[in-house]
Image (cartoon, rainbow, N blue to C red):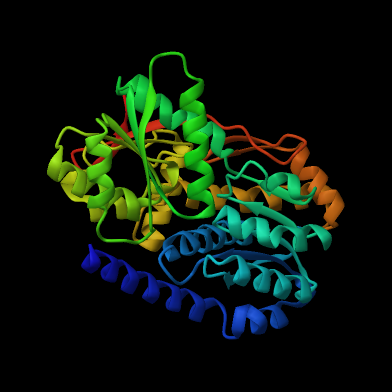
Length: 385
């Protein structure tokens, strides 16, 4: 496990350095911003570019740059070039606030794509809202996020709905009643695990949570928690965490129970899950709103172009970042300016067809999207039947 993390970390670090060097010669893109002047539309992309969750922030940046390039090849928007400026929030609420202050101080950045974690989003959101900077998060799923203000938008499903989908897989698709939960000790992990419990308690089909274990994110040994889940008679495990939880849990659980069923969330839908989990993640399933193996032409083109450019397939959250940039730029084009209130209203009114499906926001800035159930078979992601 440690070796896998080291390889991924080294790869990500190299990619980030190359990306930043190519596009920004000054800290946080300041030199680039100065040269572009008022002839550009600047979009801040914020997420963890260092640390355990760096692949998510890097995916946001890659998706945003790819979408910006597509617009720029067609003349930009309103005759202006699209410029992506990157900021590393280290997946920390404190650093997220610091980054938000930098963006507010820049004066010429009117939109933010990010942050990654709900807790970081919610720490920074009041600053963006107060300064009429539109924040579109491709990943925030906390129910309270979008209620922070009118300039706070979510291009992701609320966690309640995704949790219900994960439970549907565990109980209905896998036909298991005794559910065990293993969750990471973060704001998102704690709140999501609580939602999973509440939703299962409301069911009238005999399903129940027989055990719940909280663990530290990034640990290499989950065996003590697994032992307690197994002793409680768990038939299916819902893992509330990213791929770096799901992969080792699958490996270690199947050492003692090869037949255990495991269900995750869309943030675990990543090629890294396959690389780290190997044969142990066979049969793992989760709900996603983006499926890279789809036969839809726009998705096939996006996946092909992304893989050709970056060498790996886009994750669900990466695809949501790609569409988030498209949503913002389409709104700017529609109103003919970057006027904050006009653009915000246009975003809430528009209907956008992207690689994550039909996007239509409600008055609160939330979006409703259909889930696809995905399962790992023969080392690849496929549709759960």
